[in-house]
Image (tube, rainbow, N blue to C red; front, side):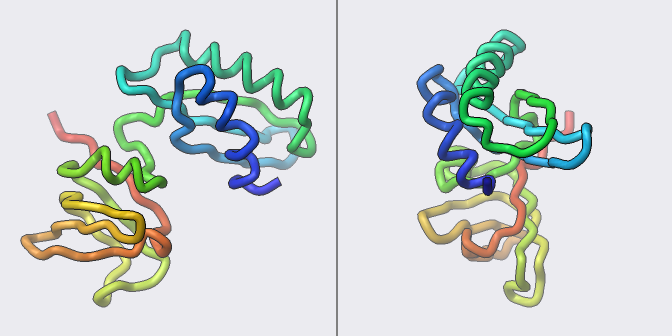
Length: 150
């Protein structure tokens, strides 16, 4: 089962509980496999939230059995350096500092670190050293928030 198929399976249950499935990681193989879910809600995530989602998702995974072999289920918050994957993520964090790695060079570079100026269904615009760069979402390899230094 692909990551996208897993999202389709798990997202409705997580959303019914009042959370967003912000991201997931799947690493299978041997007895050290892991399915890691990152959940979010507007006022943040605490341990009780993680436990609630873990119990619900565990029951669903037991019934559906979508992944081969043994793995551990982990549920946590996205953290301060959260991954941005969905258009909604980019829109929510407009004005924040981001670090973006592209699959292919854009304007001669693959790495961009700067202020997220805007986004739409197709592109994000990042201000780096006073210059705006338009980056196609479809070719972003990874995008993360950069936590502010205290």
